[in-house]
Image (spheres, rainbow, N blue to C red):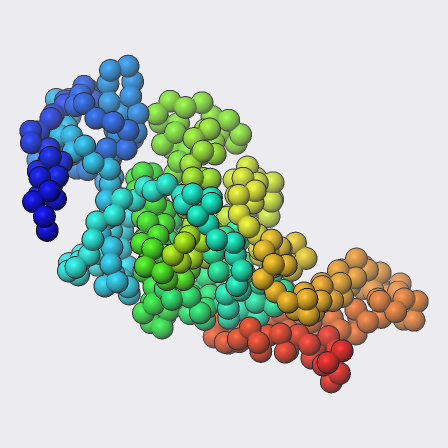
Length: 439
Ligand SMILES: Nc1ncnc2c1ncn2[C@@H]1O[C@H](COP(=O)(O)OP(=O)(O)OP(=O)(O)O)[C@@H](O)[C@H]1O
Ligand SMILES: [Mg+2]
């Protein structure tokens, strides 16, 4: 190292400590007089007992600093000292983090020590310059038949998975994590109940999946800011691996809970509520977060964001906003789940916007033919069910009725069943054209 880098390091050192004093605490919000800081800086609050509490500058009220804590607060009172750091939140990342389950601040959840040789990265980064983003040109094999054949995802594509509760989101994410050809999975579990975390890691992900994954957890009982940071941390880890040239799979469960956490922060800092109580900052934060994934000049982050839809209402403001930002949406349908059709992806309501540019004409024809049969069947479903449709009236409907059972069994996939993209396409050909697979 040259002497210059040492001089630079010395220049950057905060050579004196700046302190402020707490004036009041309202709910989540801590207001302090000083220190001189800027938005996004981390501060340490020194309680009367115990160790210091990290907090982040989220706003200002006249001359006063508004802070939000990363952990539960106790033992702080008027006059407690607030120490400035002049730095945003950083986490430690590296290849040795693979296989670990960490919290939103990058610390192992099992209280073990972090491995050596990790480097510091900022959790908040700018999205890559739009002109530095190569187009998505290649499909990524995910090992889920319905997606690989009918909703093909490209390397670096960002997809929303829209679903109500209990229709198979976690199971589907687990399947993708185990089966896909990505180099590494980064999985963010945000706002889940504590019980679900272990269930996901042990049951849905399994040892096989965890070996090639980093899991970031911020459960629902954590302060709102930690839940938001969980999303930033997972994205920053994905970016680190993308910069190394990896094809990363990022799975974020769920964007709705991140938006809800941002709502808590926004309302507490005095923003006005707008649609469904969400303050404007939610709609500014979401694009900034979701735009960070995708392709870059080095590697790709293929991202899956789950969005909770209440009573399967796809017009919720968060669902609407995310759908507009992402390059595709998969809808998991409660009706299908109730019928035992898993994964419960409603093919007709789902779309992969980049599929036409990453698949061959023949693959597209196969997908279109299958969609055509499915939609013909669905349009005439009631007539068929009550026996009002007479066979022979329409060739298209006859065909749809005849193919329906095979199509449904093609769309079904057991949790542990693996299927490559080529196998899926071959199976689809057999279902559609029978023995005459060259049709
Ligand atoms: N591919 C599948 N094959 C068979 N059963 C499945 C499949 N996918 C999901 N299920 C069933 O659906 C149930 C709910 O799935 P899962 O826990 O993944 O849903 P979820 O949407 O994550 O729920 P929550 O909203 O509670 O997080 C599972 O217990 C499982 O029995
Ligand atoms: Mg779940």
